[in-house]
Amino acid sequence: MDLSAMDWPQIAKWLHILSATVLFGTGIGTAFQMVWAMRTRRVETIHSVASGVVVADWLFTTPAGIAQLATGLWLIWLNGYALTEPWLIATYALYAVAFLAWAPVVALQIRIRDMAGVALAAGEALPDRALRLYRLWFALGWPAFLGLAAIFWLMVAKPNCGV
Image 1: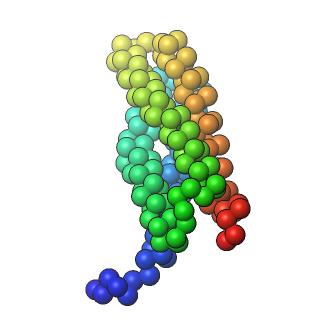
Image 2: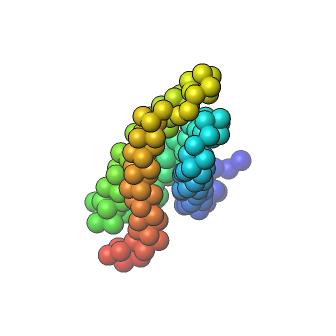
């Protein structure tokens, strides 16, 4: 295969869009499932769903988040943008906000999963502490979601960029 004949900008854009879709889609999907499970207050359901959410974050969200960063930098380089374009600075800030909200969410859902597993094994209800952690998990999900939604807009509009 002749690598020089490949359309690298198109490949980079496709990988960037694909990873954005996986990142955002997995985030929305797992958040919905976790909210739905927690509403049932059924320990078995919460444990099962939280277990799947944790796995989905490691298999899909984390690699997609890394791919977003890598392909975004690749696209900046391929398109000749300055790293200091105002819309890119805003993107970096929003990405940092989303990451700083998401990282504790991962730890919280692991703790909720583990608490549900202990309660399930003991035949007990979900502890109140797990419900408090869930409320924090829910609150932290919003900055991550809104940050990524704003990044989508910046990627399409590229305000003050002239493109």
